[in-house]
Image 1 (cartoon, helix red, strand yellow):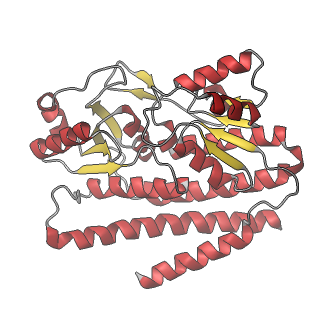
Image 2 (spheres, helix red, strand yellow):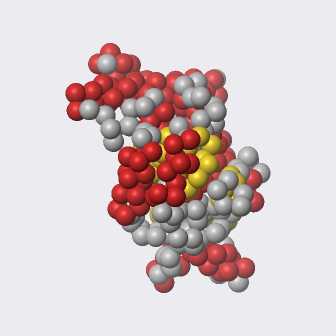
Image 3 (cartoon, helix red, strand yellow):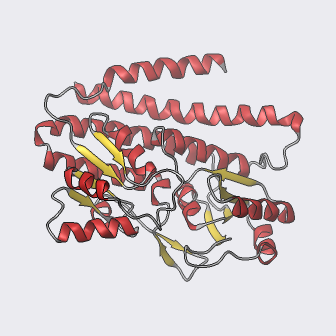
Length: 333
């Protein structure tokens, strides 16, 4: 393990040589992201820009409204990165744009779709488009970053080459992680999820979300007992570590009654790189598929479970960083 950590440390150091922070002269472009995970994508992909997140951590983004100071902030932004346009603050920004009060580019779902972004269908809720948690799908994250790249180039054409190089490096790191994990997954697996966002952490791996404890934002949660039989047919259960306590307790109860492993993921975060969270969430899902849910793991075997998590993290990070570094060397030549 120490040797593997040393290798990763060396590769990370080398990657810093090939992808240094932006040093171009002039004022940095301001990018406003509506939520933390979007901010993490932009910060990691484009380290030379200023990124401000609009909605504070721990606040329900479906209820949040902009303050007067935030309206002024948005008016100064070169680029505004949204979840697609369904949140109230995003709809308000579109109104301000249409009224000529915002000059910067607002990125919405149609901007992302040009680069492969997709909404998943809520299989448990009339096959409705799922607008929640789209960033948890790494392919969507790449599409969001690419749309941001083009918007940055439009607002700051002098740094076009810099933005393109940074985006390609980010894309290579994400795809490296994707390939490392997809090789470990049974593509026929199914899951019962806690809420719609969890679906996006699963289906890029080939795991289908077949039922949800809370089907939609406006729909009440289902009773645990009504989901037990469906859960028994699934391979894993998935819930948000950052979800309300009542919802977490319900998923733990469902796991106990169905005797299925439970994977905890993080849907919203306020710090750290996007790829770090992608690795953590995916490692938790893979452990659950292997039957290593900490919900039912005996104390004496938990150390080995933690070791497995570290192995998955090392594998994916090493693969992603090596690909990103190699791409940087090729492009600089």
